Structures are given as structure tokens and as C-alpha cells.
Image (cartoon, rainbow, N blue to C red; front, side, top):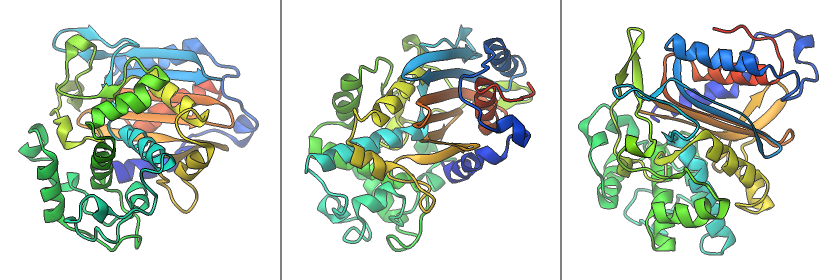
Length: 363
């Protein structure tokens, strides 16, 4: 998650990184001229060349149109990935957190302008930082994962008070609303606020507000990875092979990077979000990023040529993820990876290009 600013910027130029001629992309539609065998071959090539391991699902008009798993969920025990394999989604968690915050605002339990001192007066600039600043990464609070990662702290359990103390120690990097700078600190705090208002752990709020109402069967707040529960381990590439990655303790990233899910459930969540079954139409419009605010209130803008999508991306340990919903086309794609040695951007471009019948050279 610490490199998320760079990865979001790379996603924002997704439409400029595909090599296709103008007449190739003119008027294309998702799902037209879709060569399923080519898509299968694409993901098989990723597996065979140690370029990536994970799962993908594509929805069209709310229905599963394609899914594939490739590589292994647990290399040591020879457990292959399947569509039921669950992955740490990392910062896609933020869209779930933002959705719950918007629900609380709709319930008149919170406002977009509520200041942080209502809940944590001890935090720096708490009388100036609003809920909106936290959602839009405009709070100025230092990104705690910039210093936490690379130390032993990431594998240890953390209490709310320990994290608040860390945030106080780290301080601020600018005054609220002066700049936009990605900070995981913002969404950990939003998770704490959800817990305070709902009077229950973040995991229970997620279950009651999102998982049960939407019928998600493979989504929950993660704990220690349990491979016997179809959870994938994550890996880093090394010398054309894979080595087991460090496992972040999820108490360190509650609300900002802790959710476990699979591509099918992620697509369902984003489909339901844009169908108006999670927040109101007004809230959804507020959540979407625009040309002047790349982060929005929990939804980033992700274009593919002339088609505009909204969603989230994630990076944690060896896990990488991306979910995009294209509302004008009613198409969703989610890719969850537990090992990747090539650009995740290139994987998404490949999948969307093949799905659209565009020219694409397999790796």
C-alpha cells in the first residue's frame, strides 16, 4: 500500500499505454468479438512464465461473463488457485470503508463536515480536519505506512490506541485541504469512526452493512491467512521464481487494507454500489472521482480509451488487486493477484483488450 500513489497514477494513464491504431479502438464495445480461448491463453501464459498468479472475473449486465484462476494459492502445499480462492484486496478496502461512511451520513449519524476532534481531539489539526478531508486524502496527516513497512511492526498486532499514538508521533505534512496526498492514516481513522458510531468492530460493521445485505459469500475482514479456508498466501518474484512474502497483521490496516475477497464478490459489490443498493444516487455521485480530484470519496477514475470506469486498486505484501466498474457499459472487472512480476497495469490492459476484441499480443 505504501506505493499506492504511483500505482494510481499509472492506472490513470491506462488508456494511453495500449498500442492500438485509431481505427482499431473506434466504437469498440466490451464483450463484442470476445475470444475466450485467447483470454484463457493469456492467463495461462502469465502462469507458465511466472508473470502472475491469481484470479479474474468479468461481469456484464450484472452477470458473470468470464472467470479464470491461474497459478497457485499455496506453492509449498501445491494448492492451485480456483474461483473460490480468497485474496487480501489491500486498498480496495477503502471503497468499502467510504461506502459505510456515506451510509452513516445518510443516516444522519455523521456529516461530511464533521471535524476529527469529535472523535479524536488528541490528533494534530483535529479541529480542522473533516470527514471529507479524510475521504479525499486532503487531511495532511502523515502516511504511517511509509515508515511502518520495512520494520517488524507490520507483523505485530496493533491496538487502536497504539495506532493513534503513532499518528500523533508522525504528525502532519501540510494543513488540511492545502494539498492532496495519499495517506493510509486517513482510512484507518475512518474505520475507527465507523466502530465508534456503530459500537461494534469494523469486521462486524462490514458484515452487517455490506456483506449480508449484498449476499457476499467470500468477503470479510481478514485475520491471519488461513489456507484451509481457501485463502491465498502472497509471494514476491525472485530469479524467475516465487518467495513467500511478509504477512502484514491486519490489525495494522483495518479500514484501509484489511478486507479479504475474490473477484466475483468484488464485482458484485461494485455492481450493487452503482445499482444504488449500497448508498443513494447522490452519495454515489459524490464518491466518484473527477478531473480535479483523482481520489474522489473512495472511488478513483480509471479510463480505458474513451470508456470511463470507477473503482479501486490495492497493493499489500505480495498481493495486488484492481476492481473497475464501467457504468455506461454495465461491465465490471476484478483481478486479484497473490504474486506478480510484471506490471499489473499490463495485465488489466491485456484482459480488457481481449474482452473488447482489440488487437493484443500475448506475452
